[in-house]
Image (cartoon, rainbow, N blue to C red):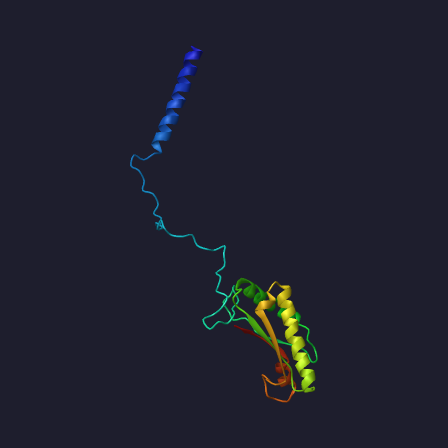
Length: 178
């Protein structure tokens, strides 16, 4: 008799589980939550890759490929110096990368000085300034065939003034793309 009651109890428990499970289900299927359908030919958003810009704008001026902004092409020097300033190295590196990617492009580097000093001294100093930029670019892999240097000494001032502010603007090297 004990076996019979135990079997009945187990059967009754199983039936109650089945009925309890069925009671929680609706007989009508529930609609799926609405999600906007994406077109099947849509390309995934490029969140991992930043937008890259062309190396040059419509007028042939070099631009930063990450931001699309014009790159500085004028680099200033201290009095009687031809050392490249550390702040200019990153921009010069971008110029080197652009020239390396565009072997058909070339650059003329103009060396300039302020009005102080003799004509000969200023021509030599302007040449040292343009040569410093040329050496940097060639050390970064730019072909020497893409680079030409010229010194104008004090002959083409950026600022015609005769004070320290004007002299600072005239001590420079300028990259001209062709």
